[in-house]
Image (tube, rainbow, N blue to C red; front, side, top):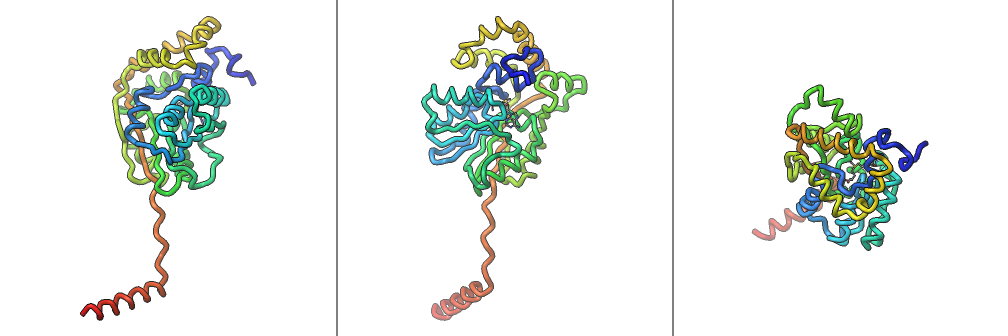
Length: 286
Ligand SMILES: C[S@@+](CC[C@H](N)C(=O)[O-])C[C@H]1O[C@@H](n2cnc3c(N)ncnc32)[C@H](O)[C@@H]1O
């Protein structure tokens, strides 16, 4: 198999391109959306958090720095995990985060492990109900999921569908907000809602400004462009698609809570004893 480092940019799929670039916030709304969502959900320092499809670890490192909570970040791409591990070291949060290669559809964790599962732009590419069921399994009772995903605001015209697949990969399947809510509810979550829904704006400038802030990316971007001239047209294609179609897309935080387990049934004997005691107390009170 050709390593992503040795592939032509024209032959890379979307995930390989992101891994090769190591973009920190490759999700709708970028890092500002991440910060807004984290302020909204208020994860506490004692929480144990899974970042599912963590990419190069920008969100996990930010969360660790701002809350001090313990985090496991997983991603299917070894390149992303390497970059995320490097980032955590550089940012002084290695003691709070462990990054591992793993598949979100088959999480290598016991059930009832986490207080929170956070995810950004990953479920949109996968079988939503299957992934949400995995999140449900590894969450503790009353654990919460917060998943930032792209949503369809209007039906996408047929000619635009292959262009979406060409830019982001053939499995890209954004749902309407209502359909996102159905998927997470079908997996068993309650208190389902979309937090911070927003229309997708052309975020070309946003990406550029994030590149400037992200030390890990900017340090070798010029080198990458000189080695692979196909990079600029490839990025321009995605920016142009987003600009032409922005009215069709939005994004929001798909939120749900794993329910409290039902209380064990009261045994008939205990029920009778309680009934008798109540009766005696009632008589005494007269
Ligand atoms: C669009 S990127 C988002 C990365 C990161 N969450 C962010 O917002 O910057 C999607 C990420 O999901 C990872 N990914 C794709 N399929 C996966 C799977 N089945 N299990 C775990 N990670 C996966 C990719 O390697 C990539 O890093």
